[in-house]
Image (cartoon, rainbow, N blue to C red; front, side, top):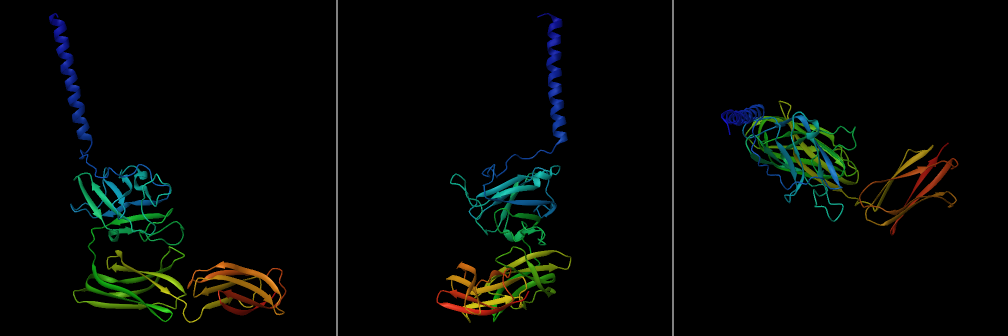
Length: 364
């Protein structure tokens, strides 16, 4: 090799090394170096056929132990069942709205799928903070959801799994509540329910809201507000009595409000008002009936039930219902008067060995 060729070779090697070093320096200056040790390696790539959707608000409030209050690009959020099975995972990207939406698996629909959440199982999640390479587990009570207003039938805000619904997470807290609750009970008092709860201490407590829903809906409705005691270290007792309840299962939850506007769910309870005073209860409205009436029927036991309409001469006019009914649960049966003459008719209910009749007036 002559001197000129040797010098050209040395120059090329040096120039190549310089380019590599320059590119490395540029790369590290342009991005944050994260530890690549995500603990969520068991999370499925795709959800089960049965699944639900979780939306993370862009401004979701997070309480990290290091003082951070927002997610950063690279942070990971994963939902786990009570059996520590990962049901879904996403990687936060501040520039990509799709990273804030994920599907979480429910009960397996086929044998090859791994079970996710069971129906009505509370959601819980874990967060991996990329900048500190630390994982934080978040209990169900520390996840805040945007309240459903009833306009979206798929919305659910109680943090309990159901197929095909949508949860919107707006807060992931540290679990420190301004009210230390010692008990929350619901008791039936005749046809009403009484809520009784006690606190050990309160800080900046504005008060409580009692909410209610039936088994037939996931939309909570506020029943009333009970003022709190502000800040106190003295144990306190509260109570609230509902309006008369229909037969069946009733769910209640207790929300606590700070003076700064923060709201948290702190307790839930369910009661069942059973039909005990009579084996059958039937109401018909409106009366008289012009085009259509609603029959509300409640049975004390689970029995095959038949509901028929007769005229005053005892002639059969319509079969309104025939089949099983769940006990202590109001069931709606429709009576259409098209084709019926004005006059009086008899509705007859036969349920097991029990029967009941009610008169209905049709007026056209």
